[in-house]
Length: 130
Image (cartoon, rainbow, N blue to C red; front, side, top):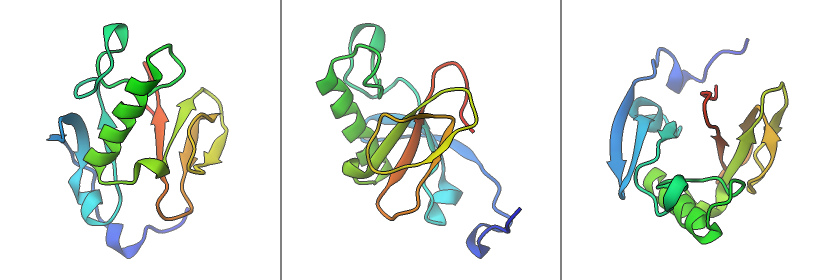
């Protein structure tokens, strides 16, 4: 196992509920201070209606595509990242891990970024991504 960068040594995650730009999420502010965005969104703060209310980020469940796109822009703004670099994969149980390439829609169990400006994310339902 490789050693953490010096900026993260001894850093323990502490999740805090915050609201930014109307979007509610759990964030790790210590990681943010080290230049890493860690956030878990819930359902509050979006524009989707009906069974998708309100912060649905998945374009694969039958929600209005314009609401999904607006929700993704809201989350990117709340995180302080470029919406064009937001790359959301659909989590499936397995062992496939993919590089986030700046476009959403891949199916895998995890993802990572290797380029600046790319913000990887995982869409999940009943299970928590790791």
